[in-house]
Image (cartoon, rainbow, N blue to C red; front, side):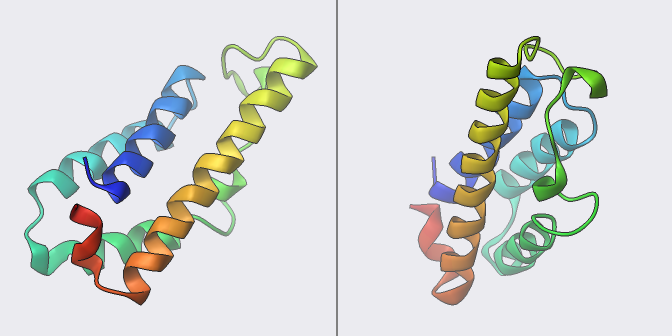
Length: 110
């Protein structure tokens, strides 16, 4: 699995584990698109992902909490751990996308 796809899938799985609505399905769809995308669409796909990482309503804006209906965060410690992991995964995806767009997008398919 390439580094970009791995980063998408890990973030999607974390959101699915906590039943975060909306982004879970979207990231699943993006991972499926990536697997089928021709090389000519790679940059466009990554640009879309990069834009989704910051701003209101973005992946970077998510906070996992029981108040929002998310699961497996019953205690403050569970909430903290889930959100710290979320931040690590969002940062990793950002780093992968930024590096790929800076260099050769096709290099992440290794």
